[in-house]
Structures are given as C-alpha cells and as structure tokens.
Length: 313
Image 1 (cartoon, helix red, strand yellow):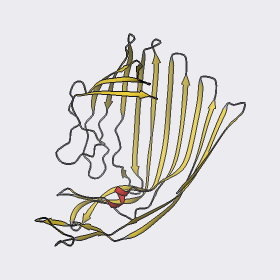
Image 2 (tube, rainbow, N blue to C red):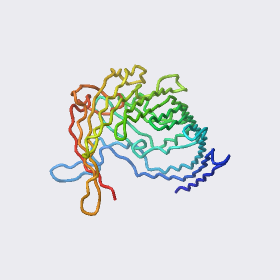
Image 3 (cartoon, rainbow, N blue to C red):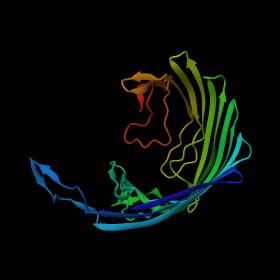
Image 4 (cartoon, rainbow, N blue to C red):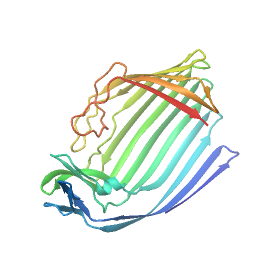
C-alpha cells in the first residue's frame, strides 16, 4: 500500500523550476514453510515427505514501513544553459528472489534471507545542460549513499561454500556521466557519451560487487534518403580491476553495432517503423563484468542480426 504526492512550481520569473515529491509505503510479506526437496515422484507416486527433506525457512510474516522524499531544482542561467540539482531520500524493499532465493550450483549454493531489511538511500545529483542550435551537452555528477544495502557475502550454508544475501552496514556509489550531441545537418548527427562509477562498502572498506567499469560510446547517425537513417556506434569498456569478493578481473573490450531505422510506414490504422541491426559486427569475444550467467556460458553473444517492428498508436 503506497501513497505518493508531487508538487511543481516556477519562481524568479520562471527561471527556477522546483519539484517536490514524497511517498509512504506499507509492505507486508508472508511465506509458508520452505522445504527442500518439496516432494519426490517415484513410479508415478508422489511422496511429500521424502528422505533427507530439510526446512529452508520457517513460516513467518515480515512488515516494512518506509518513506521517501525528493527535491529537484532546474535553474535557467540563459535560454540555452541550465543547472540542475536533485536530492532524495529513498528506500527499496528486498525482492522475493532476494528473500527466498535457493540456487544449488553443485560446488556453490546461493541463499536468500526472508528477514532482510529495506535498503535506505540518500542521493544527490548536480548537472549542467547546454542546448545550442548545433550542439547539446549534458553532464552530471552524483553521490548515492546506501544503508542496509542487500549484497551477497561469501560464507557457508550447511557446511557448504555459499553466497548469502545479507544487509551490509553502509555503501556508497559516486561517479559521473556525460553526453554530447553534435548536429552535422538536418538529419545527421554525431554523439559521444561516457560513464564512470565507483562503488565502496564503507563498513568493510572494500569494493562493491557488480560495478561496471568506465565506458564510452561514439556514434554517428546518417540519413538514407527517404528510407530512414543509419545509426553506427562503437562502445568501449575499460578493464575492471576493482574486484569484490568472489569476482574475477574483466579485461577491457570494444564492440561495434549498426542499426537501420526506417521512416514511418503506414499500416492499417497505425504508423510503424522497421528496425534492422547487426550487433558485435566484428564477432568480438568478450565477457561482461555485470553478467550473472551460470555454468559454462561465460562469453557474451557473438555477431547478432536483429529485426523489429515498432508501432505508434
């Protein structure tokens, strides 16, 4: 059950836009007894109490009561240049998968915790936006402090090596992101974007897991007559050597993609557009640091050809 409210106003002769919002939530979670295995079938006969059956977690109820606030400021220094400042206090209730996860990988077991507490966060973001006739630039720096963050900690479960979901005391994420768009003509443009993030477990003074390395994208959009446009882009990732427990180093890599977006095509009573593309054109072999693939699949897909149809209603 949640309630949300937002208010927006313009002051200083409409040069300053202020947005204020708040939310309150009551979240209840209830589970039955969790058994492993739940049952066995032998010769077509179901047995609900097989030998070796164990209780993963008892029946219980949990309740979270949380609230959030956000304040956003957009100040127009001139018609083309603006400054932004955003602050927020937020929360996130753990997913069912985080509370009740049980994945047996043979040599490793991943286990959730029904009693996980909600994550709480304090966030601040400052940015600059410039929009000229031929160039658009936006850049942001941010700091996100997390309390009771849900993370996987190496440990043991029933005398086996395990990754256990748990609340860690305090963590923070900070970094920046930037994007520049340069209009070359009425239908062509060049764009460049980059992102850098650093995550730290303040309590243990160690890197956070699942943090992407520095990355950047260079792209070019060109018209194809009246048929549509081509979007050619190259994305690069740096080495990720700031590793959390259980992670391995990820070498840097780059991939090139090509997309064709058609002009609007009428179809029956709606308009639509075709999308054709080729991803990882050079068939590069690489590993994504954020991938959670299990088993023998460790590389990302090679050369991909995609096709799609988007409709406008």
